[in-house]
Image 1 (cartoon, protein in one colour):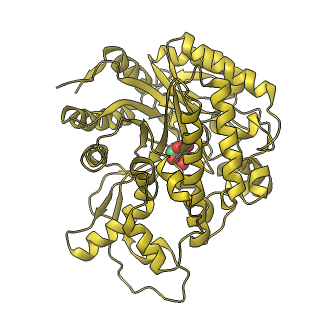
Image 2 (cartoon, rainbow, N blue to C red):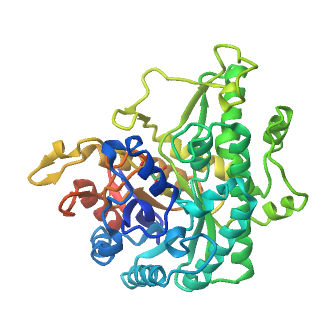
Image 3 (cartoon, rainbow, N blue to C red):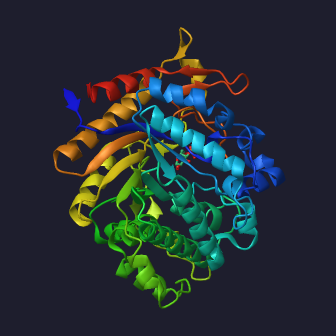
Length: 457
Ligand code: BG6
């Protein structure tokens, strides 16, 4: 069957500043944490060891071109642009991002820019990070500076990438700095992130810039084990906490009432000010980026919660290892392609069919060198992964979902948060020692698909 996509469909990939640039300037929480606990990072490899995009941006953009990308998302490093988070702008960073943006535009590759992709400047973390409302204002200033500097040539902005991840990682499950495990603090961080997002949107609207502004959310459809009301309720609560805590504010301009009621009943609501409601209502977006990797399978709890134990999301559900589910054995994540369709249908039916695109989808694989054939990684599994997801995406579009593009994670194998180079995701293989880049089979497949605006399967 031939899968043809609408005209002007966005074909591309995504990456982020910290994961690719190297030449770090302006310390982030990742630099700080790595210097103190390198053992928390796979093989002790930290965020300095990258594909050195800071030096190789020009030839890397040539490679993007070779892969027939018409769009590409990366992020600006707040810490590089404003090393202490609030003070002087670093002119070298301005030059760097100007060059990257101009070159992308010149090559016919539309730049999509994220303002915050997990890389909190350490100076901001030292004053409490997102727990401190002052950081919300510092971020809004940083966003405004970016719009002023680059807003004439960047027409697609994203305030945050996966804002729930630093909340989960840093304040619930101990996989990001500052390694806190405390639900109320997590709720405050999430809430302040929503306020920061809304302030950036406000500033963008006030500046009458030429483009559009959105956010990138990792949406994990929550599937209950069964239609038994207890399982359904468990899935609903997981959805409220992990998806709708950001999705509703940015698309509906308000929090889900049942999430607020639930947290209130357990005395877990963050402190808020009377004017916050207006601000959140102004944070409604023009464009939603959807990152989709895997669903969440849940069931009602098998055992009662110990009321003395600290409050956690898992008070309401257990994860469910569905028999027979397809897994990516390397990353340990489920592969469930129809999830991408379910997300789009949910957006269409329950959120007014917003302009959206798939901003990340991808497959991390360990020891990919073993798949080298004639000097090239023959990653059939990745082609299968992408084409199956695209087939479901195509179905969604043919049923009226407003999905405008597909970006793969990622362009060149890059450094991952804690996992470093354990799982490789790229269209292009990176030799970290020599910095040699070799296009994988999936890169060629994607280039042909993007060129034809279609593929056959
Ligand atoms: C997304 C992030 O969560 O998934 C990326 O936006 C990340 O930054 C990607 O690298 C893959 O996850 P991981 O943890 O395997 O790198």
